Length: 120
Image 1 (cartoon, rainbow, N blue to C red):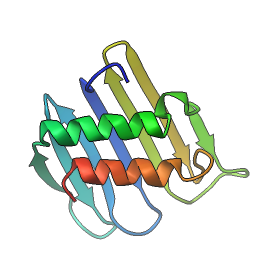
Image 2 (image 1 turned 180 degrees about the vertical axis):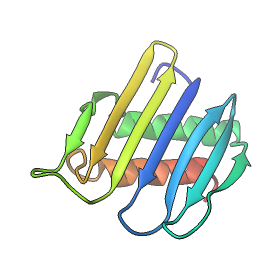
Image 3 (image 1 turned 180 degrees about the horizontal axis):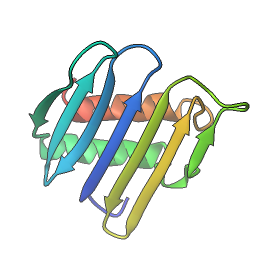
């Protein structure tokens, strides 16, 4: 990437289980999670500069900037839906999926990097 993100909006909604949404507000993150039977809970998180650097490095390692705009399972899907929008100096990433993902382990690695950024 060309530097630290100036904006992020990330949503991950599994078919079953806990959904999450992360939006960036300056260098802080608004982390919202909810389940099918629960009300959303929002927590503000302030990652350290080191956590931000590691997150950006992880995005480079998984080549997020080269992901397709859309990943959709053949015949539609009722699986996990996800959306990633990241804006950084000189860069706009906008990608989403519905029951489909980039090849290999790129998405699980992205999710792990996001969890580390959130301090989880």
